Length: 358
Image 1 (cartoon, rainbow, N blue to C red):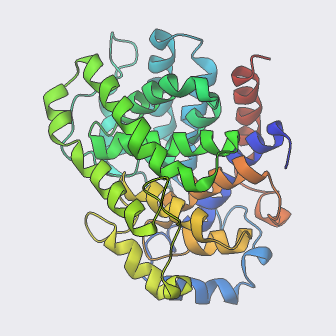
Image 2: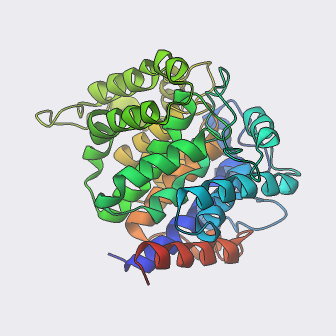
């Protein structure tokens, strides 16, 4: 296994790679056919032949906002009263770097409402439409900052609050919790098969306790709470990993077929766009991690090259891959010239130093 610092660096750098590959300057994020994407990929010589670099492979809003999350954690000091306003400030600042990156409507509207210099100005209030994946696709640095088992309460607190700065709806900000949690589990070396059931059985109830304790829009949040947890329970039951006594993960024989996966991923969605929402972006990333053959190319196939919101699922899966494996198996051409590579590596080192008290 790669050393811990290398895994921190790989998690941050590869999230950018997963984003850029899934996005392909909008071309693949908005392609509605996984087989078409794979055909174009083969025409490029496969993942191992792609030099991920500008101008053809820019990162999207996912990476820019992930960097903003990391910067907020790094620059925000040690207390809630300094960290949360700093994250909010970084989110507002990063919106000036969105040309050609396609930020989502909730991210745009949410950051516009943030007032980081005012008391509690990082809370935008409950948002009925805040169900998208914009919080889930940027919270992985929280999992690096709060990566120890003893950090779970802080991970929940900051992933909820960072998430609902733009997506104040349980479907949105519980996606933030899931992505941060999975990265922390990857750093810990927790068996993959346990990630989903720990999310559902242990962490989501803790998150509900936290949200209730804040007193912010509690009734509205509780009313919308069941959807995320129920969808995850159904998924884990289908995979045979909801409880300790099940023998999964189990996959249908045709799950390796790209078109079949497109249909399955779509079935998980709220609105027919796979990975578009807070519950199914981390779910598809998790499914890819559970089912891939151990190679980077196959993980990319499953998490980044499908008919849904492929950069958002890819950014989460790649961050988890890096946190588990470092850069093992990843062609250097995929990351050597990645846009913002230096910033991503520096953020990783800073998060490592803070999280390990160096």
